[in-house]
Image (tube, rainbow, N blue to C red; front, side):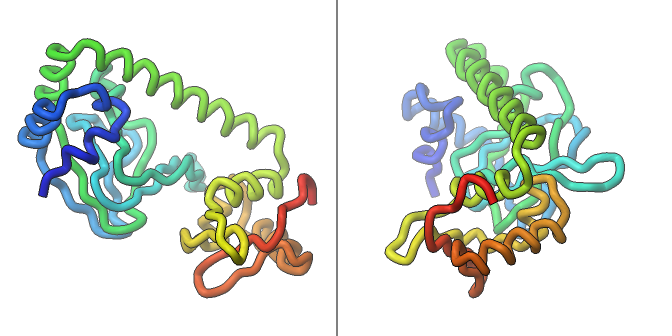
Length: 219
């Protein structure tokens, strides 16, 4: 199966001609990870650039006390490790397969060869670094300035898909998943969700969340 169409959606490779995408796929190694399997761990050396071709993965960090914070969820067409690979750094975060995943792994040698042949890719890497910094800055700002409800509201609004019934979230989020994403306890999430259900704002069940009406700015 050809994956050049997915590779073309990766921001880093978006300017490459089709023949280079095909060559990139040819030198890459396909890797499969089952749901729930750790893909890479924080602090590990980076020897391959990974491109998620199929599936979904969760990006997270564990502190010294073992508490987990989820930075986000990535879908097909996302690349990982290009900055660390270029700078010879270790993994800064961990990742786990949220569903069965397929990756293309590109070795350091092949990646550096690609950069030498297409120096314009370094501009895309700089843009990627800027986007990562912007995302982390916004995340830290939200943790510092928004209350728990405000962070839950932001996650819901980002995930909800408009339907005739309302905003539908089918990510099968558990209360613990949501707690990990917003940096709160599961008990606090349960309390907020109970209030949202009682207020007629959301409906839960059947492994989904349905937003019935516009969520209030404050709760």
